Length: 112
Length: 507
Image (cartoon, rainbow over all chains, first blue to last red; front, top):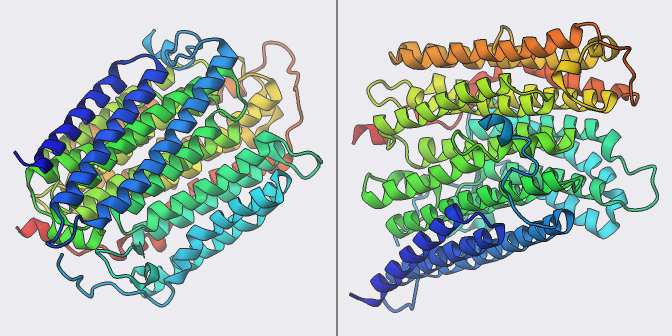
């Protein structure tokens, strides 16, 4: 097993764990952390692709590296925005939850 | 890496495409430099200017029957980035620019900042985000590579989420957070797909990729991940749970933008993916599955809409249902046994555009009803049609368009879809389309009959509604009705830049 495969499998595992956490965790903060884990896996995947697609003589393909920087910035901005929303929600209601039992405008009626 | 084929070059008016993206960006930067009080004035200049640019691009593409393209910095793909406006893009660009401009007119009453001397948060955020949405939508329509599309998609999400929680109430914050989490899941899945596709083909340019793409496990995995991610962003059933609270809780002008414009962005990306990046790779089973999701969205969305007690929630669930129609184009247009390609795709695009105009008009009407009654309980609407005749007329016209009565754009769209069901011998989708129309008419008529009924007690209006807001709603509703007339002319613009028959069929 060469390094690229190992890192590729690591990336896949991170994506899997992150996806599981994002779907199953009810807490918004944990969901955001899971999203970052998932993002980390994807960034690793980009790194593996950069490494694997490298032409002879170059350390790596620069295009995926450029993309991963952009993607990291985007993920950072997304995390900041989500955290701000969670914090504001906590200030307003005293607890930060996205389950609909407190307001129940949409889903409550759908399930009834 | 193979050298780029000299297929693409900047066309004569390609620079207009750059203008379509940077005009809103200039507006956003200016708003921050000059301060929030000027945001509305800046938007008031730049959004119509954007509409002008979109119209010029549309006319150029229509008359020359060629797509416009622009190579950024003259760097050829696969390394460079192209902007390309084909028929689908120019039609969507013009339609969305018109809708955004009219929403801007409507929003002047709620987010007007000319009179006040101090900077307030909500108007500043609204106008900046409206310009951001306009820029991000243009970017989605004309980007020629998958990663730029990812960035555009994220810009659209980041612009749309703050609109949900403009008034800062707890339940809208909750809706915004849930929307953001769904959208983040969607975009990260899209990003994984982009990585896999780049790993397989060494390019992200749509034209180059469509020449290299072939059926293999990595491509299938990438396509599935991207499509599911975009489903979450488009709120296709069963990933629609975020949409009704988010769209119903926002202020009326913001709801109109979100429902009419924003969901079309990710839908457009799905169309790009399956019709341009990977033409012909959608298997029959996959197409039927997507169609089945669309059909469930139509039935469930409409049935749940019927049970709603609040007008804005009803309209939001109706959006869930109308989104379903958009996905019927996949089984209807991608049937590999027949080379039927144009009709269903045209119908789907027309459905997207007519839904945008009609739904924006309906949300505006609901907002005006809310403003004058102080609530939007459907059972208490009695007498409102007498108090706000123009508003309820706009609501009715929008509803007629959603039902699909002639000569509205909705009629033409559903007619093209029905025709495609007959041409491709898939009668089961025809049943769904017709049943959806019936259910839609049921809830539109419930609302209209309540509104025209006598009030239980004498009606007291909380606030007078400015005339121009009613005119903006009516203008959009009339547009959705007149859209049916595009069959007489500009509808063939949608075919500009389409391949006659996709090459991948032949493999």
